[in-house]
Amino acid sequence: MPKKAKAAGSRKEEGPVPCKQMKVEAAGGPSALNFDSPSSLFESLISPIKTETFFKEFWEQKPLLIRRDDPALATYCGSLFKLTDLKSLCSQGLYYGRDVNVCRCVGGKKKVLNKDGKAHFLQLRKDFDQKRATIQFHQPQRFKDELWRIQEKLECYFGSLVGSNVYITPAGSQGLPPHYDDVEVFILQLEGEKHWRLYHPTVPLAREYSVEAEERIGRPVHEFTLKPGDLLYFPRGTIHQADTPAGLAHSTHVTISTYQNNSWGDFLLDTISGLVFDTAEEDVELRAGIPRQLLLQVESTAVATRRLSGFLRMLADRLEGTKELLSSDMKKDFIMHRLPPYSAGGGAELSTPGGKLPRLDSVVRLQFKDHIVLTVLPDQDQSDEAQEKMVYIYHSLRNRRETHMMGNEEETESHGLRFPLSHLDALKQIWNSSAVSVKDLKLTADEEKENLVLSLWTECLIQVV
Image 1 (tube, rainbow, N blue to C red):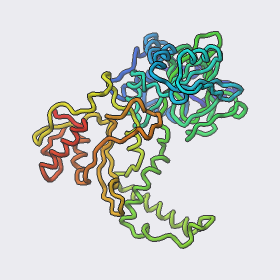
Image 2 (cartoon, helix red, strand yellow; image 1 turned 90 degrees about the vertical axis):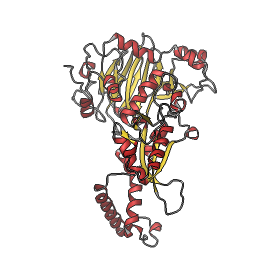
Image 3 (spheres, one colour; image 1 turned 120 degrees about the vertical axis):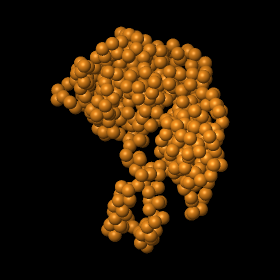
Image 4 (tube, one colour; image 1 turned 60 degrees about the vertical axis):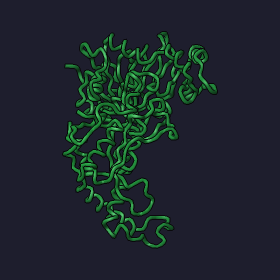
């Protein structure tokens, strides 16, 4: 049995915990990742640690270092992204700021060495060699198929956006000052070696990025060097810094990150408006006006505070008895901005339906279930007060890989369908069954049943079996 990794805060030494205290040895570990399913991919990513152990002992709690002395896995990791890949990538039209940053940590601060406009390989290499600058490559899954394949599966596994950055740092140099992030971080070492120092968080599970001064963070609680194939995980808020040791070759690692703005607080903000909206339709107290001049008060009045407390208790009681929460933004935002399904052919086959046309006597099943969300929302095409609820189905089959995690809101559009609320039970049948007969769908008219499955088939969401 592999030894369990020790974590930050589990020992009381004054100095850094030596590397062996966090070490997990893989007995002939995996030669490559397992893409059979989202769960198998994650299992192979953190192998030999079991997923149950990971989420019970490490997730959002403490760092985990997994050392894997596996030449085959190291070779695979090295194929994900290399320094030499930059030459061909630059020929595709990379821009400073958008696609790459050139930077170096000087005196505890990040010094950005970007030029204007397009990035050229010879200039990047010159800054890398002569200025000892780190090259940070943003969202390489846009260009590298295997990272697309990995991150698409991880988005299915976590139900959250998964981004990545590659950092290429020359020997004897450091790219970034000590800082913490607002994301859960998985780091794979791809080329060379990287020396890491981790510190206790000043803001556990931080909601924003922040640079920390050396004098404020104290001594590292973990210090170690990653080699190709090794994996490091740490929770958001973990203060860290990394450098490439002098006298060695350059270092390349990929940082895979997830769970940004994906907390219970975010979910509460997302669902509370729908809960209030529904409750106000049935409870006249919530429709009653607030006291005169309440908005002009400098401080909340005792009456207002007492009333709001009562309303919150009422909403909590109502929440206990409901099965459906109205997500106003999180579901849609996730689906709109995530990666499309991985396809070696580039995904063109997902733009048009294939196979048999569904009929009343057909048996159908859902496909790409991990890329679809079903949600009930007020009709977004109605602006008046009498908004009817509709069933919205959003999917990511036609999302553009090229814009993933790039913040191009104007280039992002939602893909999906809208149905009357009366279709909800029939849709749930399709969602919850491995296969279902069209004629058995819970709709009144046969025409409605055929129209429903035809609409889903046109969007490539079901297939005839």
